[in-house]
Length: 212
View: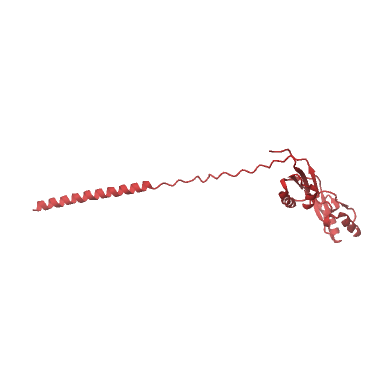
């Protein structure tokens, strides 16, 4: 009787062990299969960047185009302001800088509306001498009140004029000036545009060779 009971217990233990082994194997297989079904992430190279758009080529110059140069403008700010005014009327607007040779310091006085002759008379009435109306350049229409080799000399002249109610300024001689070169369609009038952009000079010039 005891032998039979032991035999039954032994069989039950063997069946339990076999069932546990089979269940554990199937569970591990399912876990492995599920993990392999998930797609892996691929890192994008951080150094790669989208291609940059290429700059548009300069437009072709028509055979009947009108080309003109405007200037000189005293500084980059006034040049850019004029360039923005010209852009809607132009095919192309290019800025260039021109260096003027010279040494020392100039004392100049701007005239309202560019009326240098009237300003000259006012200065003469105040007893100011050694001056002349500026005919061209960035200060065209104003009055030149002396050229000095040192800043001290220019400052003395400045103080003299301020003491008589005038407000001139000192500029380094040989300062750079700026010009705008314009390519426009036929019918563009440089004379009219020169007044609109407040350029001392504005005249028609030869167009550059067509660049295609």
